[in-house]
Each structure stands twice: as structure tokens, then as C-alpha cells.
Image (tube, rainbow, N blue to C red; front, side):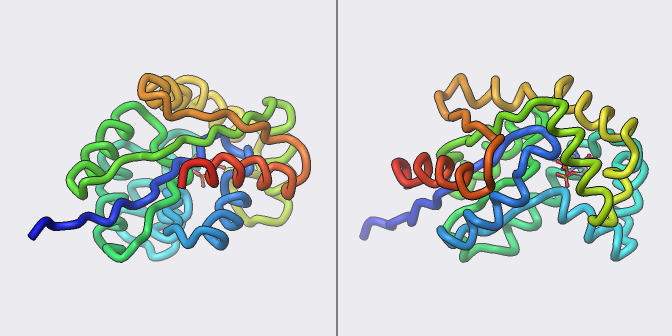
Length: 198
Ligand code: ADP
């Protein structure tokens, strides 16, 4: 008997801090039943639970720096193994470095799966800063209230995370989507790209 793998649909929602990944992730998981994997959310819940991992991550996050790769990769591996029933994952805020891309490819390959598409939200830097400062008024996130920390996060994105798009571009997996406009119109553009591939 030939063993049939059920291929998952795995999507990376890519873009700088404040580009709308969290908001659009909620729409996408509701519509397609994918498992949301937000490393930012996972790290914040580790901090809230005062775990060793959370303590390690906090000092980096408070300064707007990336958490070390091995910490994040181990956390993602655990999360994926805890959701063996997933029809697919929506990766939000991960991968953020080339090393994370390589590790993610290996984790998926072990499960006979791969990244199907990287949807990249394009938003100007001034709009990002405006949105993040606005979010900081209500989100309770300390990294959103200080403009220097916000600029540091955008700098980390430019220095380390843009390489993620370069990495997946070599496999022709990157599709750019305009991330400015209404939440509904941006979602419609994302949905159109997903529907041609799922
Ligand atoms: P945003 O993208 O709006 O900055 P996130 O919630 O995705 O918000 O991330 C918040 C912080 O968590 C980042 O500034 C970084 O310190 C840390 N972080 C999240 N995901 C990763 C990751 N994949 N690799 C390293 N650090 C991460």
C-alpha cells in the first residue's frame, strides 16, 4: 500500500513590524483553517509565564533586537510538533533571518512538506512608525511606545529580515502585496493570491 501524505498549505506572511501581519493573519486563519504561528505572540506568552525562555527573550525584545535564532527555532519546532493535526501553518513574524529560513525548510522537509508561498506586505517606513506608535497607545506593548525602539526594530528588519525575501525569491515563492489601504482591500488582495495556490 502506498502511504498517502496529506500535503499541508504553508504560508509565510512577511513584512516589517507594523505592516499588518497580525491583523491579516486573523482574517486568513478564520477563512482557511490554518494554524497561526506568531513567534511574537509565543514569545510574549513565554514572558507572561515567566519561563526561562521568556526571561532570555525579554531583554532582546525590550531593545527592539531579534531574539537569538536557536531560541526561536526551538520554540517553533515545539509548536509545530504540538499541532500534528494542522492543515497548514500561517507563519507570522517567522522566519526573520536566513538561518531561520534554513531551519524552517528542514523542519517542514522532515514532515514531507514545504513553504507554498511568501506573501510580502509592502508599507512605507513613515506609515509603519505612525501605526506602531498608534498601536502603542492601546496595546500595552512596551516596544510600541518608544520611537527609538520602533526605529531599532525597523533597523533589524532592514539589516537581517529582508534577507528572508531574498532567500525565498530564489525558489520563486515571493509575492508582493500592497500593505496600505483598508484592512478589507488588503485582505482581498491576499485572498486572491492564496486562492490561486491552495
Ligand atoms: P512586530 O513584527 O510588530 O515587531 P512581533 O510580535 O512579531 O512584532 O515581534 C516582537 C519582537 O519579538 C521582535 O521585535 C523580536 O524581538 C521578537 N521576535 C519575534 N519573532 C522573532 C523571530 N522570528 N526571531 C527573532 N526575534 C523575534
